[in-house]
Image 1 (tube, rainbow, N blue to C red):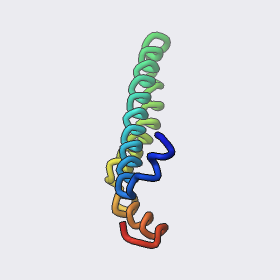
Image 2 (cartoon, one colour):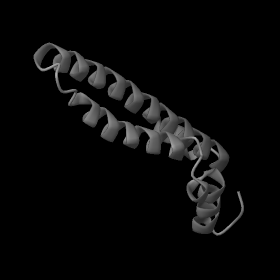
Image 3 (cartoon, rainbow, N blue to C red):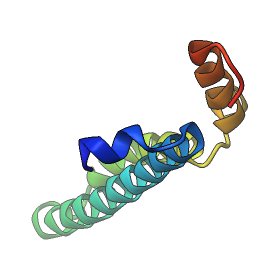
Length: 96
């Protein structure tokens, strides 16, 4: 983003841009999880199909993806968009 364009962005627009970046980050994280888990599943099936060890990786990483998604899509009540707006207003010392 152009540094000159940043100064002309309103606080509401800046929050919207930050939210869009967080959502994009979640989808990148989800895609990485799906691709790597699928690759590990294939490796597991090809090398040692008697014990599905890749499920442990999928469970651990999947828990992290779930937490990331809950936070990004405002499902965690104490860290949602309203909380974020209040924090920005507190830092600016005024209402947005």
